[in-house]
Length: 294
Image (cartoon, rainbow, N blue to C red; front, side, top):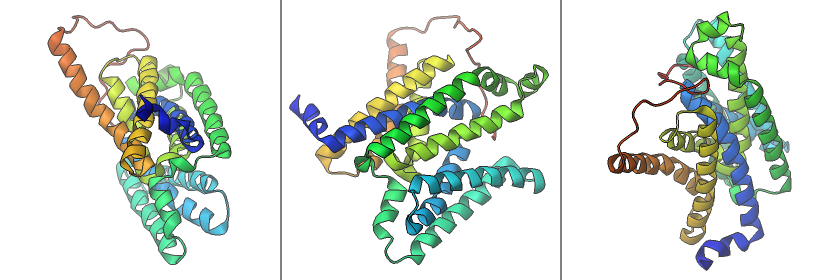
C-alpha cells in the first residue's frame, strides 16, 4: 500500500495529481463531443497549432499559455477562412494549417540556441511543474467548460444528430459548431501544461472512447470519461514515479491504454452476461454517429 501512497505524499506530485484531474474533467466533457462529432483531426491540429505561439511567448517572456491560446485561436480562424474564401474542404484546410503551424514552431525553436530545455516541455508537457497559478487557470477553464457545455447541450445534440433539423428548429448549428471548436481550443490549451502539445489528444480521446463502450448517453459518458481520465492521471503518475519515465508522456499513454482496456473488459462482460435486448433511448441518447469533418 505504501508503494501506492508514498508518491502522493510529495507536494509537487499532489499538485500534479490535482492539475491532472482538472485536465481530465475538462477533456472528459469536451472529448465526448470530439468523438461524437468526429473532430479528432481538428483537436490534433489545435494541439500542434499551439507550438508557434508557445515558442514565441517563451522567447519573449510572455506566459506560454497566453501564447498557446493566441496561436490556437489563430489556427481556428485560419481554418474557417480557408474553407470560406479558399473553397477548401475542412480536412484539407486543417491539414495545411496543421503542417504550417508545426513547421513554424520548429523554425522558431531551432532559431534559438537556448531553447532545447523548453522545447521538451512544450512538446511533452511538464505536469510535475504545475504550480498554484496553473491550478487556478485550470479551475477557471473547468468552470467555463461546464457552463458552456450545459448551456449549449441541446444545440450540440441537435448539431450532432442532424444539422439540417437543428437549423429548422432555430438552434443555429453554425454557431453551435463554432462554440464547440472554442471548447476544443480551451481544452487543448488548458491541458498543454500537463501533457504538452504532442500528447494532449490522448487525454481528449482515450477516456472518451473508453467511456463510450459502457454507455451511449451523453452526460453519463462525460462523467465516466472524466473518471477514467482522472484514474489515468493517478496511474500514470505512479508508473512514472516508480519507473523513472516522463510523467506527462506516461499519463497520456495510460489514458490511451484505457480505451484498449475498456474494449477488452466490455467484450469479456458481454461474453459472461448476454447483452440486454432492446436498448432504451431518450432525448439525451444518440444513435451511432458516422465520422464527419468538423
